[in-house]
Image 1 (tube, rainbow, N blue to C red):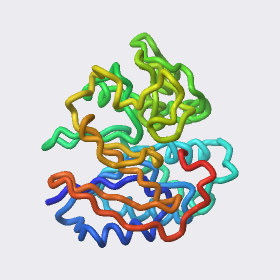
Image 2 (image 1 turned 30 degrees about the vertical axis):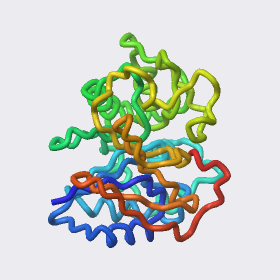
Image 3 (image 1 turned 180 degrees about the horizontal axis):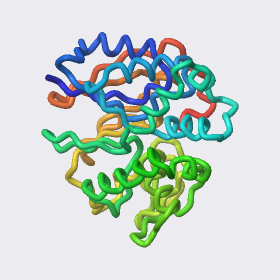
Image 4 (image 1 turned 90 degrees about the vertical axis):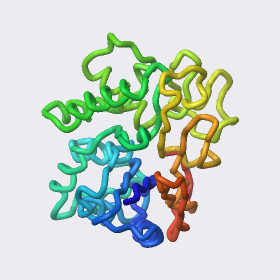
Length: 279
């Protein structure tokens, strides 16, 4: 059995089919972990959701910021001008797909290797264990009775720094922002969610979340997505692998074979104009 991790699909259904074929994926034998953002920007979000859901227990899917945006729109939020979510919302199986999506985790750990999977990042104050606990706490809100209220207040960059005393929707928003939007923070762990470029282009005083010295999650292998401008996939000096290789923007869709470290990718077939490739 091989465990594969796949980066941001973002509606690139044809490339996903090609990648699963390239890795010889067999749902009876293998497992696949999607690191978030199954939907949006690309042309076939509906087909991606159906394919991944049909994989059943062979797939683990993390929630990304675009997946949460879809859930927010379905709960009364506004459709963005560059969103490609209408086919999902109009589908006869929309309710079933969204109910399934809302149940997906924000973080997951591969037991055999200890690898932690998130969509975006982890603030320096959290260990791997604390990340999993807080992710489960936020997921319970998203999938439960408080989900609609959360989605109405999901958007926003505050609070920007972790405190154990955070409570209510502020606490959930901070956890969600870290796990689905984080790229840069300062040495004290204060988030800045605005910069989206590759490391070296950020304002002074900010570091990629994984470069913050003495972060509590050091020593834990981490696989993430979200950052299409990152510049490279492997960052061995920090024990992290970033799998968003910008398929929807004309890059590639990438899979990591967790047991061997092999990377397999396929090219984009229908790239979008990268007006804002950091989304």
